[in-house]
Length: 297
Length: 312
Image 1 (cartoon, rainbow over the protein chains, first blue to last red):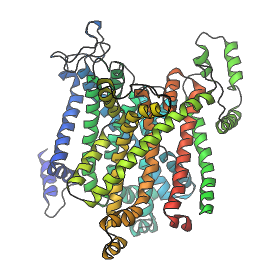
Image 2 (image 1 turned 120 degrees about the vertical axis):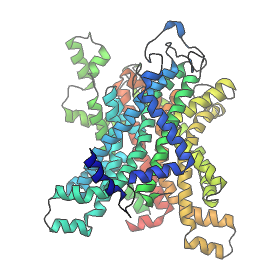
Image 3 (image 1 turned 180 degrees about the horizontal axis):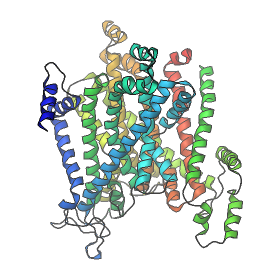
Image 4 (image 1 turned 90 degrees about the vertical axis):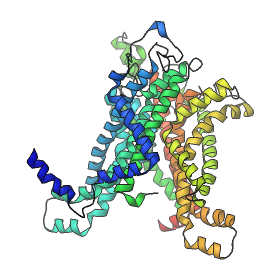
């Protein structure tokens, strides 16, 4: 334990070394008051998602005829819904659904998309023509439309939702990976490796990957926000997370039925979506400014 | 230019087939047996076979594919499983409402976005720029269906200024029903488009021809609108095609909130009731939209920037 820290510490403290990307991003977030504010709000939402079971005194799916459609009160801060469930509790638990889907799907999309893009960009030929054409085609569809099409084809449920979002996002990663790889393919250091008969997998992992990872991480952080919004929209349309499982989208959908009685489920879940998306967008901007400064606005 | 346009149209044909093929493959992945979905679990084997024969599900897959292509291109999708109404007529009934909404939202969004974007670029770093940035940050974060629901609660339910549901009949009534849904969608789109306009105008403001125009003593308004904006328009046109299509897909949720008729509402309804012919038709209509809007925007580039045509 002590040995490890002793050897690791000087490395990080080496003079003249640039602080790691993570440190730079952290500094970027802290420097701008607005970004910091939304980062803190996002952190609170993440904590709520993790500790939903500990914070809320109610069960998110248990129905009760005795407490249907109640207005906000000290017992139920945002009132209850048409099934007598506490709205705030459902929003807390909905944070779990949104965050898990919102992070998991872009991770899978980044892996699949990057692999396809690397393959197409590096080897070229027929694979590139097919993958390139497919990327163009899928990118012509707005993500929501693609989401609706895929959701229509798959049965509802958690893994279908993951599949929907992953399919909708993979082409974005594939395009970035392909374009970055194409640009690198004829760089002297790659050609030198080829000339030295280094095997292709080694070149891809040692020489190409490290140089394209920046833009991919940037796209990844920005797409978390999109994934959360898309999940909410699809659940609102009844194609995503299915009731009684709470999700911000289906809470708003349920709220529509009781608009006259209480607007609070709609307002509460809507604000939750907006704050979360805003938080991830602002952190995404900070990540972009650090990792991909050329694209800064 | 005509040659370029013809080339673009020819180019769209393979794309169209690829899209339709994707739709066909997706449709065949649909879980459950359509025959059981329609006739119920208790149907006898004979009844199921008869149904499959009637709608062509017993044919070899490549024949089904050819039938599907023919049906899609001739818009004959058979009858709805739930209402027994010809699906082509359902589309004809619903499509105008969706187009109205998309067009109105696009007009509102663009009419708002271009002046806001230009102002933000011209007064770069000042108050208008900051306000437009906050506006666009909100536009990216607030889901359109949430904004629509809030507008419905405030302006229709509480203040009673606008009708709550439906699509309306007669010109004035239709426009009246359009105000809230189109504004909700348009505002969200304006957030995206104004950002695009801003960065595009900012980029050309530094160009030589803008400096030349200023040096000639042209008025600032003229410099901005005649010299800068015209040249900044190309990326905005690109954004517009994306924006039209995302407005179109956004209309699905909006139709649901305002209980408006439309292709989106029809499709969602069909998915819920597993009404296969209507699902298929709805998806094909949206897919055709994607191909056609992209084609029109490709043609629009050639008009806005003739160099593109000359180059290819």
